[in-house]
Image 1 (cartoon, rainbow, N blue to C red):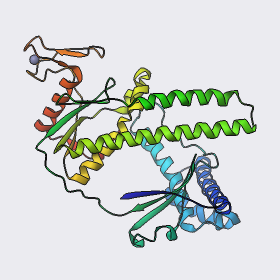
Image 2 (image 1 turned 90 degrees about the vertical axis):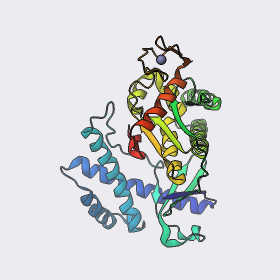
Image 3 (image 1 turned 180 degrees about the vertical axis):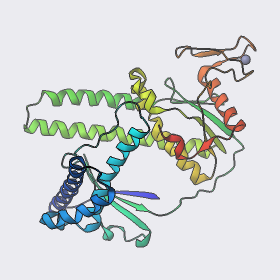
Length: 349
Ligand SMILES: [Zn+2]
């Protein structure tokens, strides 16, 4: 599935219509959640049927096409099933109990065929409308496999995702965390403070909120961009990439690490790694994290170190190496020696 995203350029009347549609989608999702909360044993199918009831009951719900109505019921069910899944798997921390969404935050799934005349209609599987802080966007999910002719490089690489550097590879190269993310976060904090100082319901508050939303959007885009480009570079220049199967959810619970981790956007990076790997048809292997930083990559001896020990110093064979570099070499060795698991299932945290 490929996703194409375009910014919409419309007039005031059109935007008002979009807002209205978004509000209706929101309304249906919330109504579905209400039903699930109030009654026992509500199934996905019950929610689908409930859509028809809502359409009968509310004129404005009738104005939305039935496909979009069903899609908002599906979104409610998605939130519910994710919650069940988290409970079943005993996910640490919050289980994501489905929440009612405020108006204007959600997405509309509808049909905007006229916007995409350049693509064969039967290949477009879903159209989604998004309202962001800086305008309206439309996304088209097109059913297509993107394949890229991979030029063999004869190189295999292991990478260690770290806090000091974003990543260190088994050749000893590092990619640093982008500074601008930290800078942008400072700006967000400042805007947050400014917002809290404004009077409720004032014009200033409205403006401050808009500014903050835009700043958030910018960071999210920068983060995504960094993750995507870094992954692409790595895949293009190697024939095999191995990384450590870290459980991000567990690590983010540790507050000290959390900031850098969210900064570094490891999760998005690994997803891009997997999808670029698939496009290029090269293996991307997640290896279990046990002992990757403790073992000596030279002789295999266990060399204990704390998080603050930056250098690997082996008493058995005398190897001296940067801690993360040593880990990256171990990660590659593990991937080559064992059959790791590939694909997105390795990303589940
Ligand atoms: Zn050694």
